[in-house]
Amino acid sequence: MIAQCACGFTELDDETLVDHLQLAFEPADRTGSDGSVHEELDRLSCLCGFAAITGDDLDQHFLSVFAPADAMGRDGRKHEPAEDACVA
Image 1: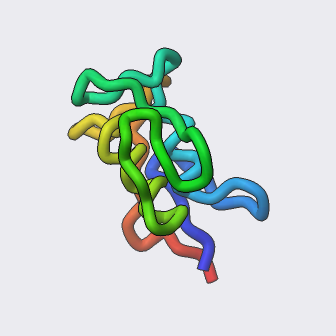
Image 2: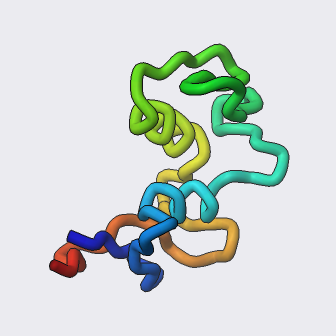
């Protein structure tokens, strides 16, 4: 299944939907909604002190601190997984 974003992005071989969402939401200064700076340090750890068990956990950590509640990206477009938009 290939995931799509509400903005029209379709997952690529080298860019997943999560990668796309991180690019859409991550601010240039990497300051999250909690006021802390979030940046991947070593494998599976964040500058804020968060330590993930898996890469998916770290991805979800970044999305949780960077993605706004309204899912509006820095480009002014809505970015969220598109419902019923998975392509087989």
